[in-house]
Length: 124
Image (tube, rainbow, N blue to C red; front, top):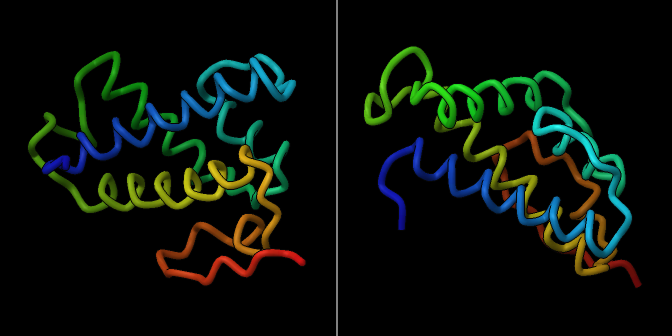
């Protein structure tokens, strides 16, 4: 269990990278740079796209990985927006995981931007 918001965000981004690797290797996902991976996967699996959120997530990822900056400070100096972006990334990862497994459900195509829970509602 990760205690810090930046650790959670980094772990969720690693999950996204794993999904992207599976998509590239097994499902024909096109090769793109980090800033386009989330959008590319969501487009491929018909998951709603939020350009502003994707841009912010890529920005936080790059700053954290390349500059060891979290928000406007150092990791450990938590800030609310970083926590929210980690949660959003978790919500989209939940949908991507199901989509990669071939599960077709209304949940997969539902808005992940709201921090609400939803029933899976498998398509019949």
